[in-house]
Length: 334
Image: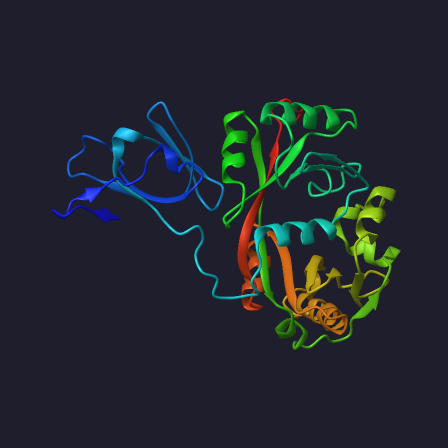
């Protein structure tokens, strides 16, 4: 916080700082004795009619009256990264999108509308990586119409928590009644440490087969053509299987190699085989193949409520780079 020459806290932000990362202290209960304060760090996404809106790294928005401010200042755009490969948001956003390609897409300015028959939100949501080329309300109306034409709920995928992410768009969607349904972490780490782990008895294939799909929980036993097209698309795609009892693998995984990046997804282990290191083994086998293809950095995505997977990735050295959120139109059916 900032202090005046007399040692008092000072508010050193103004409405002209909208869009910048700030740290503020406010009275949490004006008039209470003793006084209680709350500190908030995030992007100042609006300052209108005496009310500030700050969006935290997690995507949570905090509203506060200007009159409650005790101190405030602009802070560096993002904390220094101490673990994992260096990467900007734009690079990672495009790499992760290429690893989960939709069946159908259409540009909307610098947004991309993506559809895949409803298979995963990532492949059935608008990806905004710049200016849509029209006012936001018009872009959202066009987005809703495009998905409704395909009998799909309209979603927009928005990122927070890193320099260049979309806190202001996140806040704008919330103000318009769009509902945040899912939040996931995008994590990064070195690829070689993953490949150094023991791969065990893991088979790799360029194509997905029926046995792999029977372990993959999203297939539901009857994989449709949209699912197969999404799973098989990407710069260099590999599938891994660890044998189990019968014809269903004990563990599976998918990896997409794209230049220096290797992305891990669909890593699943039969509950009966958990705590045997099979998830790690699948990732190690995929990592070794990715290293052979020249990759050096790794990424993955994990939903914030998946505590067991997050613990596994913590132990493997993956650090959170940014978060993304899927917002659903308030006009979509339940």
